[in-house]
Image (cartoon, rainbow, N blue to C red; front, side, top):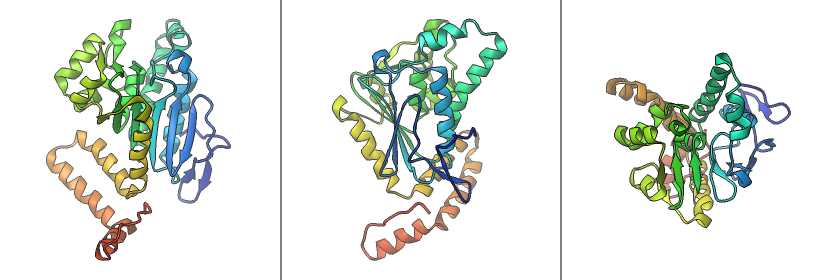
Length: 284
């Protein structure tokens, strides 16, 4: 993990706090243990740059150790999510790089997806308008996706002469919407409408544009108020079991659940049930 100088308060047990983190290349706000990360270049539909890629990667790596943030919402400013890599700041310079330089870049972008999948907090993407290229991958790497009917999600790599296998797309997308549908989107690069995306299971739900962020944040807050240690375990199992047989998965879940049964949250839930009260989870 690259250290974020002066921005992460280190605590015992390799823990940290990121509530006061000041982002340089996007907006970052924490309320009620929910972090909202907003890509903030609305005049150009919120494209990514080399710097924003790197900061996103480092921040998600740091979030794995942040005990003051329990859920994350990622969205875009204005009426769009993210138009992908900036044509002038990224695409142009890439045409001048040699193979080692190109590979360093593609590995760095993949590291962002790895960091999003590895952090224990549930990540919710709130997607409106354009969600293209690397922006589509950011939404794909989230755990939950909320959209609008007018959103347009496009894995458009093939339209610029590249393969659809970018940043884990060929592994992640078929698991979300199925092999045939994923193949169509990755081969053609066409846009998937919001209504189609919900029907195919890409979006968990659709919302009016003015209600989208609030809906995503409400879900994030509900998760943040729940048994967050257990949520982190669920996310870890969802990720790890892709590479397991059924017997291995059952054993892994037996171990994971036994660990969760040793937490204070499990005991709080039991005593609250007996007292006919709502449990107050604390994530330990």
